[in-house]
Image (tube, rainbow, N blue to C red):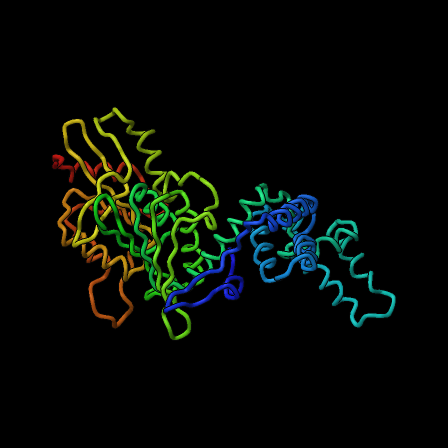
Length: 413
């Protein structure tokens, strides 16, 4: 992912709105250079990361703007596959042993520079040259590129432009995304990225998601949250009908930023993830393995019943339907901040969804700090109209189905 420093030189402001100068190639003069970079990366397979970085840096003499190359190089490195060199797991042991041997031979005497390596090699049962190789083999720069990026120059250009858009959102206070067909894919992408959000109607068959940005309130680990926010931008490329509007913090000012489908940022078609989290995948798999589509008369579908709550739209993770006409909603909760979670639960409580099963990660069941007034989260969640199932590491289908049986009601048209 690109950083703020990669996009800052290409940002401009007009009437309170930020604009990004995406890299375009109408005359097909840039793509041949990108093809050379891709070929260079393939030649460097099997080399340490530090040599790959140096090889890309040496291409500066071929470009007019080294700042563009810096961003493209980072894009290439993010698309490449690296692994630690063989034996890197022994590097801490090698360092400790070598430094201990050097200390035993202190002060050093001219000409004995190799003696600590030789004694360390004997203690470690390694050749002396292996001590040299493994000394800092766990350093990130020592990672070996085992696979160079496999993509076309045109796609690399789009991926770079996409990275510029992602970098802008690192300073977003709030992001609004409006979409028509395929809006459920955006919901899945938002849940997969674990972003705080609300969903509301925006007209005929259109929905609007309002997301808290990395620079928004209640966000403690802003860098980590910003990285998750950036994942959302590639997900939007799966859709044709969407618009993103964001408020971006720039010093003591807040500017607007807009993003829409365009050839400059579309990295090609992809497939949205089938499940938003490991917990959802585990629950769905356990249902089909232990309950099945026919057994006990229950069937399970994903995110197909939007529920209106206080002017917003709530899209439960699963809907369970029985052949006798009953249905129940299931929502997994495992990543929201306590403040955001409390607001969501209060809205669910006010809506009186008595056929909802809330499956909550036990790690969120923490009270308020000592001296702070208000209900604990367990107390708030305990007042929901439906059922609550707590879990620690893995969602168990048995307790969930027991809760579903208790709350299921006849489906309403």
